[in-house]
Length: 516
Image: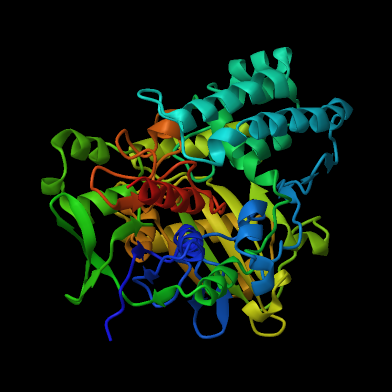
């Protein structure tokens, strides 16, 4: 018997699964079509050989938004916040700096920096909190506003003026659009501390610390911290979302790659899979990135020329590679206590280092000294590797999507360069390596089916945020094609493991169906 679907969700990443869960709970019949062999998208577990498993591209996570956890009852399906991880900035001289909430510690740390950090952190967490009306609902239009748009702007204005107070509001307005480099130089002396914050502000984006708007990207990251501390674990997010979805009757199909979105009379009516099968539904929601959705699955001929041009201009060439290393033991980082191997380790000793790592990527060149974010998830989840063995996951920035001379000629040697750099901090690392895998941004594009290989499906720059994300005409999750919606990281409020785009899209679908 043929299943009658109300909604098709393209892609079983976390936003697609969140969206499917909400719609199923609203009584709709939902089918999720995932191209790969397992759900999870960029969070799906990867394997190296037969014995080593890695937590996909996402190897750290803040807790999911509490409203989503509560609405979907995810704790009943095994979801929990992972073990809190500190951030440790590695120093080649063994003088590492540790950040643990309001506390920072390091040899040679100025007392003024240690004293200034808690109030500075609180100020910027308050700034992030003030943006809640923007982050947690559809972005308001600035033209032809309806009641919801006006309400969202009113709440934002109230949060900024009354929530922050006049002086703090002025400070927020002063810094929101400027670069993180100048802000940090005004506040702190320690290069390691400034390097760590700058790394958080630019990781995943084609921006250096001196790029205007990097205060905003740091606030977007800090918003996740409002839900709880960072962990080197994804907390069973995907398994919990899948089980919750199945419990609500969502039909999940893996190995079902969508080739085309079917459109009749400017209305989405279903999809055609790569094998030719057609799946029909009243609503189609794409968790794929906007460029893939519109340029490949819909096709420019079916779009208004001006809209199609806006889509083609989305900035979104990935700049982060991923190195997975299988180890036959736990490496010892010089002067780093063994328990700290389970923390988040950064090779970003100064803002100048981060900026110099970014600059070559603008010209298609590879940085001699890349910025690294290192985790060892097997410290917390021993089942990821054989007994006594470990896995190391490394984010590598900034790597150009199109490397000068081509990646094929440089991929292997550059992986060796990263391992050599890590060896300067952990001298016994090289002798423990069993195997490794290195993914360039181009590999991310191919293996995760995201245009440009960009983590966030598009830059989180000011002109691609809020009511301008991903483009004018598709910023409130619905699109110029009737009954076609977007729910992925390319939508507002953007990337990260929040689930907020998926939830907002589900609410938008329910709202618009009620209005018809």
